[in-house]
Length: 287
Ligand SMILES: CC(C)(COP(=O)(O)OP(=O)(O)OC[C@H]1O[C@@H](n2cnc3c(N)ncnc32)[C@H](O)[C@@H]1OP(=O)(O)O)[C@@H](O)C(=O)NCCC(=O)NCCS
Image 1 (cartoon, helix red, strand yellow):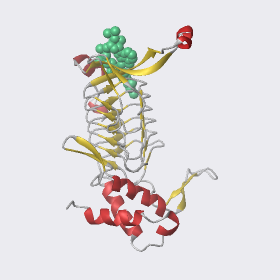
Image 2: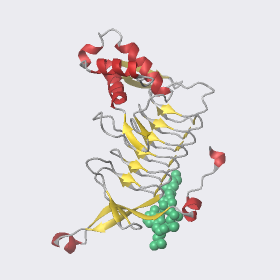
Image 3: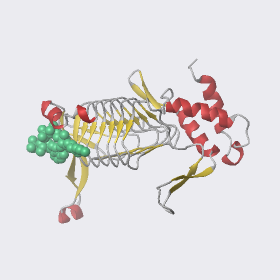
Image 4: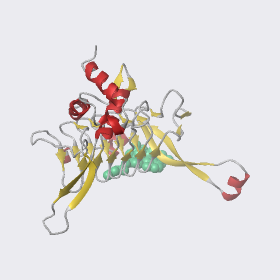
C-alpha cells in the first residue's frame, strides 16, 4: 500500500462527479484541501521517475481537476496605495496564491511573479520577476526561474536547473494520462526557449537560446546520426548531456526548391563538454 492510497481512492471517487454536483458532496472539499497540501509540500507529484522511467500519476491530475470543479469564483485585490488603482483579480477559491513561510528557503524577488497554490518550490529555488508557476508544478532544489519564465501546470523541474529569461515550460493537465513536461537535473534552458507537450529533457543537457520542442518536432542528432522523435509509447526525449541548438533543414519538393524553403528544426550539435560547461557556468552568488 502506498502512503496516500486512501486519499487517492477518495480523490478518484469525488473526481467522477460533475462540476455542478461535486460542491454538494460531503467530504469532497476537505479531501481536496488535504491533497493540495501534499502538492505544496512535494509529497505527491504529477509525475515521478520510478526505476529510471518517468510515470504519470493520473490520480494527481484528477485531484487538480477536482479542485477546478470545486472552486467558486472569488475576487481578490492588492492595494497599490493610490485610490482607484488596486490590482484586482478573480479566480477559483480553491487555487489562491501560494503562501510561503518566512523560513521556507525559497527566494521570490518582488515584481509581478505568482505562484499558484498546489505547486512545490524546494528550499533554495530562486524566482526572478515576473514569472509564473502553475498548479501541479514541482521545482527541485537549487533551480533558478528567471524573468518572464513560465513553469506550466504539472511540469517537473529537477535540481540545479536554469530556466533562462522568457523560457516557456508548457502545462500538461489534460488528458490526465498525458506526460507533463520534464526538465531533469542540471539542465540549462537558454533564453526564449519553449518546451511543450510532455517533452523530457534529459539530465545536464543544454537547450540553446530560442529552441522550441514539442511532440511534433524531430530532433536531429549530428553526433549519433539519428533522429529523436515522439512515438506512440514515448514522448520526445532529449538525451542526457545533449547540446541542442536552433537549426533549419531544407524542404523537399519542386515548390520548396524553387523558393528555397527550409523549416525550423532543433539539432543536437554536440554533447556537453568543458566548453559548454564554461559557456553555461552560473554565478553562485546570484543564488
Ligand atoms: C548552446 C550554447 C551554450 C553553446 O554551447 P557550446 O558548447 O559552448 O557550443 P560551441 O561554442 O562549442 O559550439 C559548437 C558549434 O555549435 C554552434 N552553436 C553553438 N551555439 C549555437 C546556437 N545557439 N545556435 C546555433 N549554433 C550554435 C557553434 O557555432 C559551433 O559550430 P562550429 O563548430 O561549426 O563553429 C549557447 O549557444 C547557448 O545557447 N547559450 C545559452 C545562452 C542563453 O540563452 N542565456 C540565457 C541568459 S538569461
